[in-house]
Image (tube, rainbow over all chains, first blue to last red; front, side, top):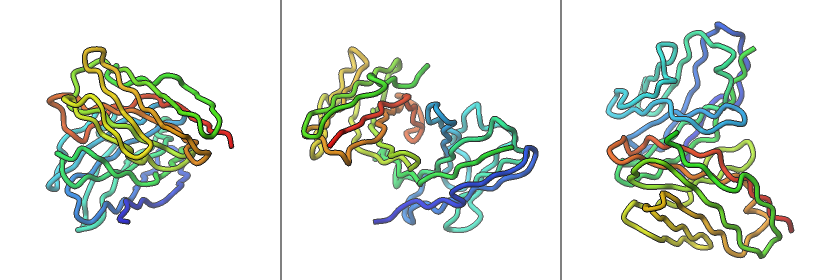
Length: 114
Length: 113
C-alpha cells in the first residue's frame, strides 16, 4: 500500500542550526502538508502546498520556515535557525484531491533542539 | 479555539466492550474526521463525515455528527487490544482550505485483553 515516508525519524540539533526534514508523498497525490505536534499538545497545521506554491500557512509558519518541492518526489521543510520551542514531532501529509478530504500522514520526524 | 475537543481524555475498557469517544467543536464545518495514532507513530485516517451527513459506518466504527450541537461521536464496537491508541477528531472549517485540519487533544483508549 502506498505510504508517505519521512526522514530522518529523529534529529537532534543545536539551537540556531538549520534543519531540513524530508518527505516523499504518495506518488499520485497533488496536495502536500506539514503538521507538527509538540509533546503533550495538539497536532497543529503548519502549511499546505499545491502546484509548487504555498496555498495556506498558519501563524506558526513564520520566516524561519520554508518548504520546497525540489524534484518530482521530495517535499521538504526547512527551519532556518532552530529554537528550543521548535522541538516537536513534524508530520508530512499528502492528499490526492481536496475533495476527498482524507490526508495520508507519514510516521513523523522527531526534532529535538538543544 | 477552533479545534475539536475530545471527551473523555482517557478511556480504559475490556476486550469485547464498546468504546465511545466524543468530540465537540465551535465553528461551522465542511467535514469532521477521526484519526488514530499509535504511540510514537503517525496519524491514520479512520473515517470522514461531511456536514450534511448524520451517521457513517466503516467496519466496527460508527461515527455520528450533530451539527446543531456541534458534536460528533466515534463508536468502536467489540473492541480489541489492538485498538489501543489515541483517537483524534479533526475538523475542516467551511470555506477553509480542505486540507487544513484542526485537531483536538485526543482520547487515549486502552483495551485490556
